[in-house]
Image 1 (tube, rainbow, N blue to C red):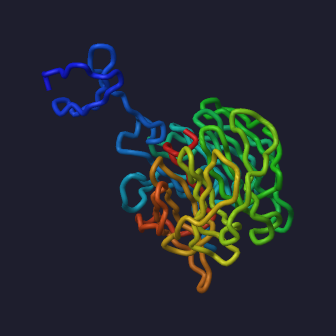
Image 2 (image 1 turned 90 degrees about the vertical axis):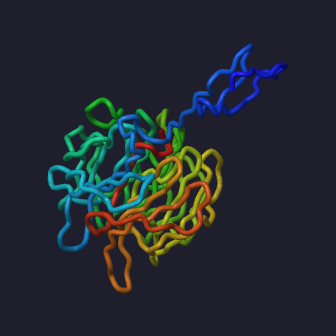
Image 3 (image 1 turned 120 degrees about the vertical axis):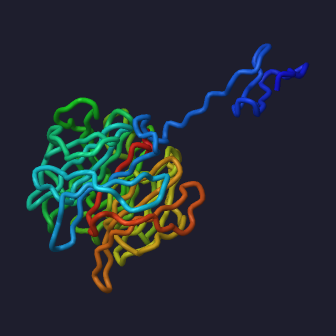
Length: 348
């Protein structure tokens, strides 16, 4: 492509077959177009965005397992390490492009512990600091590239959910700081985020089947109380599970109850409004962990009844198109009350 056409309009674009690059005409020359996406994972993970699943509950052999997948591929999860201090399930998680933070949870009683690890490596959790209060029953986690926020949770199986939100900076070890209050106290709720907004949807007040379908949101970079966004579909308002199941614009909510659904619903996070049907999971279940890359949403683990079954299923869906989910592979363990995160979710 050595012959340069004459009278080229400013801003014209071509594909250079010699260099295999897109180019734009600026002034008197062709300039290579630089392209990047902030939602395709950390540069330390060249194989693609990594998703992590935390903990499992199956009534007998509850474990502190952490396992991981590469979201752009398919296959079974691989062992990552373990949560520390006997925390096995009921916690929440969120992540930056580099670091995950798991908070709360239980072996027997709720805890205020926060622990962390580097997403691109493997290993056990390390102490980070403390929340402003103890919590379990799957508090929700949201965040952007620098800040994580815990939303809700509970300490009593028959008591009320918490409306507390607290936050931290991923790269600084230390205790969480008060952020504000939820519109309605929640536990076992969905969570999702864009680079500006964190969202919590569905969940229960006093147990997983007594609650409402309200969607609430915050502006992550500020502090203050949550606001109302809209309503969840009644098919999956009591969802359980955790993780930022979203890219930078769209949130997906999959599975749920009260009678264990395959339904996936969605909202556009930049606007306000109710969720609408977007497709179905491969297995009807509740309390799975969900997370995403820029293009795929994945769900791992969970529980369904009739007969009572704990699953290790991982399935995925295109965030752009929706439709029926496709089998991805299996977790290393089967169980529920799972939390999940990635280094390529919508908050980054």
